[in-house]
View 1 (tube, rainbow, N blue to C red):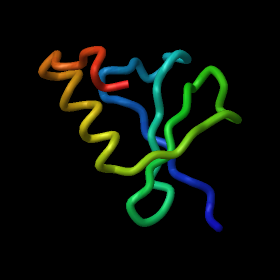
View 2: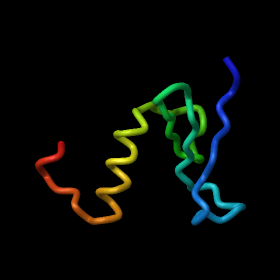
View 3: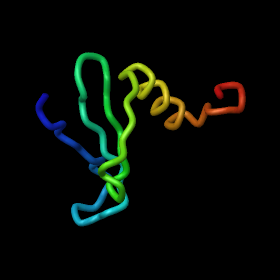
Length: 66
């Protein structure tokens, strides 16, 4: 299996070391990690990540989504 290609947000500084990074990990799955701890990551579906980002953008996260 090839190594994932990690991408950080364009909002992050190029030399920043405290960034969230995302990599396509196969099919409908994405991997997410903190650049401070690159050996630790978790996976989720693209749909779940998209829903999280949409909720953050519209500020619709609330207690009923846990």
